[in-house]
Image (tube, rainbow, N blue to C red; front, side):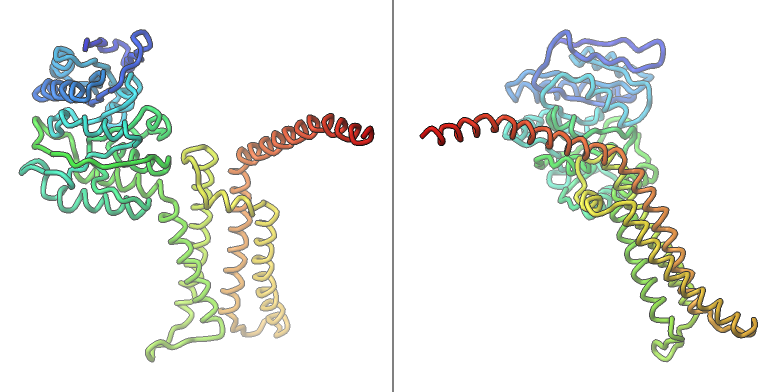
Length: 434
């Protein structure tokens, strides 16, 4: 397996060898590399041995992410093809490597000798059996002493994996493993784009959203060679932030729904007057809190629907059953009617208070509860109105697609009927002659 080494680019842009001149191969093992001269040669040798074990053709692609040591030269000397990505970032390095890769199957892993690339035949075997994405699980395999800090092994990785499974209804055992494999078609469908350590979470999430056929393989995890590039708190937060931002159901919709229901229930409960719980009076202060909860809940729901609509219409997610059902029933006119009903009801309540005050010649007025109730309804009506306009704007592109599909279906149906018309005429004529 010959190595094609690209020289570091003089102008600071990444140099990618697409491989168009030398054709495709079966397996591409892709490794990001940043100052890994102590381990990169061993990793390349193990990857080449793993490829040989499969009986297929393959290559090792090392994406150098700005190393200042001899990592790139060592990788090339051991038979890897080196590409360069000067823009720092775990995701940046992998994306450049995948774009340069020529294989039908992609195997990814770190270049610090923590993963045993001689085991990659297990990954490829599952891909050949029809799986599209294979995750190497350290927690189902063996984590050697000293390979993973106690905080990562018993808190960080398990907690982040649990959060990811809960948010996206998955059952991954090691969501942040660095060794995985997938087909070229699966890579194209996942539309990966993050640049940092959250790239590991993005793969798992997008694999699920793309409905890839997945499997897991137990793997060994060894102590790394060289200095770790991880920052526990920073990288952990980037993973958690990415998961939350890609789960508007849990970030916006569910909390918003809870706040809205509790807020409206509290308003209705306290509207007649003070209430008592365990001999403690609950009064206007709690009613104000309930009004704020209802307003906040409505705002969160609007943001959640807008986020899901944006992601769906811009094809960040392949499908979204909730937003598709929502838009089947939603229209700007219906949203404005709901807003008018809410705002109108609140306006009538406040108008009645005003008339009562006028009728008493601007005397004492004790109408804080109904005024708070009516004002909350008016604010909710305003939120629904503006939110409906935003959701209608976000649906412009998708609405055009729906109309185009309807026109195409109508044209096909018209062509089908036109094609059947002569045959019907011939059958009618034949019937008359007989």
